[in-house]
Image (cartoon, rainbow, N blue to C red):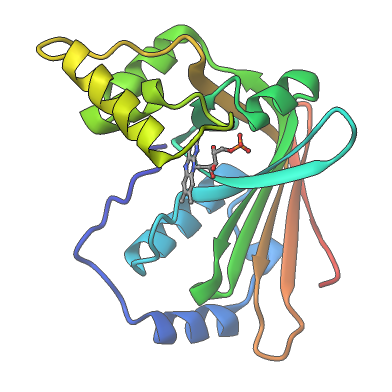
Length: 222
Ligand SMILES: Cc1cc2nc3c(=O)[nH]c(=O)nc-3n(C[C@H](O)[C@H](O)[C@H](O)COP(=O)(O)O)c2cc1C
């Protein structure tokens, strides 16, 4: 499943949609048996409602001393039971994942009173997928990725701008190579929770849990 919006130009009235979704609610008996199918439906609704960066998720990881840290990343696809994203493996999140390869991603579609949490073990994607993703980035994004030792302290903004300009000149007329530290990860999910707000604050929470290849659903108190 591609994460990119596919229904540009079909924007709906978001207030009407929010009220309709809140009234419809979320019932474990009436939803897709597969969390990926349901996630795809919800992402499409969020995209068609015009929510900016609907495929961004807050990614929570844990440092070696047990400190939770969280930041947004763009979810790039749902592949073989997992949610993928790309980043610098030497960044703070990359170091956290090397030590504790588990994460939770949170999609917040607040104008629709919806959120989805995806949780599981994290695996690194191979170099071929990193190359393909990097090649598809705009050139400025490629150069910025090379110029930025993500999460390290820099003296000032000028330092980054100069690094970018030097790299731009050095790479003129040729492809920018993916830095070896830049690559992909996949959250191999075993728990996916869908939250739908309700008019009367009795919100719906349906959680999918995986045992082996089988998914079961349960309702949680809000
Ligand atoms: C909407 C949004 C999307 C982002 N997407 C990414 C991404 O896909 N990959 C990435 O490395 N950083 C992304 N960032 C920047 C991160 O939030 C973060 O600042 C950076 O990855 C460094 O995080 P760290 O120091 O915790 O490793 C995004 C930020 C925003 C606001």
